[in-house]
Amino acid sequence: MKDLLTDASDRAVRYLDGLGSRSVAPAPAAVSRLSSLDEPLPEKPTDPAGTLRVLDEAVSPATMAMAGPRFFGFVIGGCLPVTLAANWLAGAWDQNSALYRSTPGTSFIEQVALRWLLDVLRLPPEAGGAFVTGATVANLCALAAARHAVLERAGWNVEAQGLFGAPPITVVVGAETHPSVTKSLGILGLGRSRVAKVPVDSQGRMRADLLPALSGPTVICVQAGNVNTGAFDPVDEVCRRARAAGAWVHVDGAFGLWAAAAPSRRHLAAGLALADSWATDAHKWLNVPYDCGLAFVRDPHALQAAMAITAEYLPTQSEFRNPADFTPELSRRARGVEVWAALRSLGREGLAEMIERNCAQARRFARELGAAGYEILNDVVLNQVLVSFGDAERTSRVIQGIQDDGTCWCGVTVWQGRTAMRISVSSWATTDADVEQSIEAIIRIARS
Ligand SMILES: Cc1ncc(COP(=O)(O)O)c(C=O)c1O
Image (tube, rainbow, N blue to C red; front, side, top):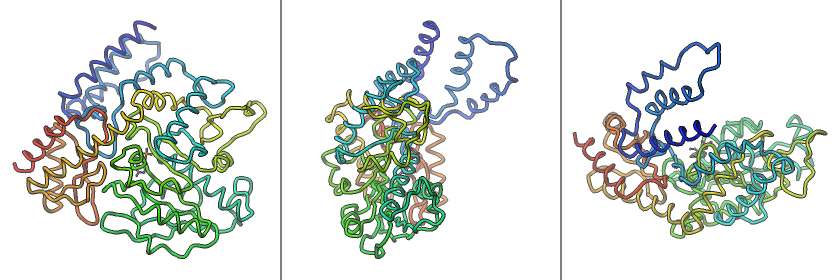
């Protein structure tokens, strides 16, 4: 056991040490060599050390350097060293962290992590929470709680009776709502298309002045952080309208919710605490390992009513919180461990510094690429930058060139009809020197 774990640790450290100097995208030859893994299932046991060696030699070179300092695709945080170490230790514990009585250590730490999260994100301290796989499932859990609550108020028990014959629920979204919200609505039987869509402005923000009249069971979904521009819907105003009508407001803040933890970005999150539920990712801006999403619900009973499971063999009665009473899964890994480790090691100030630094780095990308003559399509309010290098064909060619060059990695998007490069700065590991090196590479390739 010890030799194997030491070998794994040596290989992991070697891999991480090499991330700053290798191509961010894997070399095509390394991806081709993956076919060597496509061998028949061994009939007999094979040497564990050999298995680890094959894994490292075949797969490590074929990975995208997402854990490195110059990956700016999608919204991908890195992995703070302490969270990786905590993840290894928790892996050794192998706790099925569903019930407090069977896994008190990891259940308790999740409770502490939840309290700290509500504190740094400035959400109501009484809110309940779920540690799940990502913001998609966090949206699903929070919207399941919303469905429960608005129908309960209408005298309907949706968990017991389902949706057949239930009072209809009006669902309101912005035209720029994230597809994971739409998907969650579909899974919950609320319909991907059966929604009232509110028009948005040039940054993708919901036009609160165009909200429909609200009455009856209603759920309004808002974005805290548009996936392209980083813009925030006017949550404050939406919540005030919703309150008056007894509607539920759900916030998808997969990365944007973390703005509340950074003093200079906090104004973007104004009014967020007035909502009823929130979804975010710890594997994005908190920089913990995949997979780790978080759902928060002001009324913990609504989340519990939607998620809890009961059976004779499951000792759910406990004076403490059973993690699985709040999540779709019963058996589950102890995600709270890495969240706790990140928050404990960063502290309030370290977390704020990381977010502020990434936002300042995004502004630098925009400033210097703009000064070099390229068009910045969004107001850079957070960590997202949209760059156009000209028409769609030219912009796509430059993005491909940047990905092939390997100094950094940025993805493509279409923003309000225009093809653009999307830069998302979300990693603890990104230094100002990495930003400078990436800007130089982008300009060199765009000018070639
Ligand atoms: C705004 C937003 N919401 C939801 C999601 C879904 O998150 P996950 O991929 O963790 O399920 C993302 C992912 O990029 C996102 O950016």
